[in-house]
Length: 370
Ligand SMILES: Nc1nc2c(ncn2[C@@H]2O[C@H](COP(=O)(O)OP(=O)(O)OP(=O)(O)O)[C@@H](O)[C@H]2O)c(=O)[nH]1
Image (tube, rainbow, N blue to C red; front, side):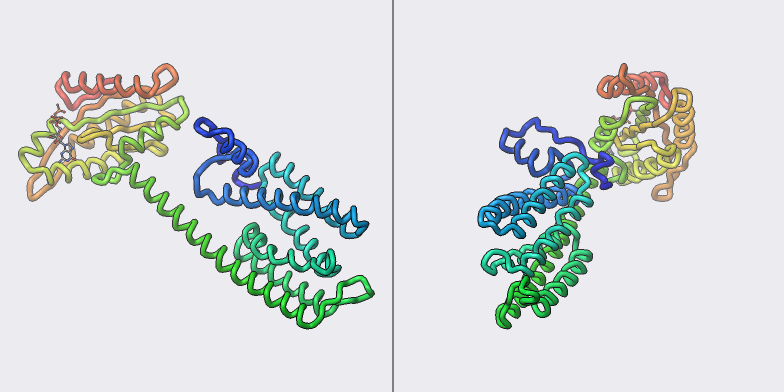
């Protein structure tokens, strides 16, 4: 089953959508939302769309064929209409677009070959085959779509050239018509391949730049750590539980800037980021929270473990020689530790961490307050 079925895409949040948009989302996207450029959402849309188009075409045409007493064609069309309807229901229930894509495409191949073989209504059956390459490449992707289209073309050649008028059942195509049908089908196949390929490249490029922008929006350019926005996002998404916040503030950082210059201050912030990151346990998050403030989120950690980690970091900073421009610089930092949970939501926890930090400063700095 696809990733959707494992629940990676949430049900649509219809908050700001009007009823038309809600209907469109419900009918075409099955009420799913998620990453705008998500390949899964695109595929769901396409499979669903072709399924709906399949019903819209085969059902009335089947009824019309029944009305004209063309029983063979009517049965074939109604049978496909039934398959497409069942597929719709299955897709809505399971969101398994891979299986549903196959349910759309293979009956479509059969129907098209059947129409070419019998000629459909008044020998016009072949006019429908030109939609096949686009549908196949959309649903099966470039590689598989091309392979299936080559097989389909070969079957088309066999029907057009070897089965024409056989046993009085097959439609008779004269030499010019069969050549033109085949040639125009190959042209459509070729153009559809180019279109699908460029669409995929375009989509990939779009997704890549979207990911890049997202990363940039959440990264602090100086330290390459998460910035405040990135950290806040993770904390908001994090499940409440054994999570501790550690707010770290460099002591007398202004003096460093004043004494050694702003570049030295930047160098110290970058080195500090590496120093703290080394002590960060697995699964934890580290961010540059503000100017000379770092915020650590320790997950699956109780208070004593959080204090232990903070103490290690405090000592690592205190004992580190920041070597800049042939000078050894020593700094210290103050810490505020606070648990995060349902009784202590993010906004409150951050305020408490800030208060504890200033208590640590008041107590002489180079301190941890819990
Ligand atoms: N070099 C550099 N300095 C920064 C950056 N962001 C903030 N600062 C400086 O950090 C200093 C923070 O100073 P204060 O808030 O007075 O705090 P402090 O000097 O560390 O004193 P305490 O926090 O009370 O121990 C200011 O001088 C800011 O200019 C930065 O990205 N690079």
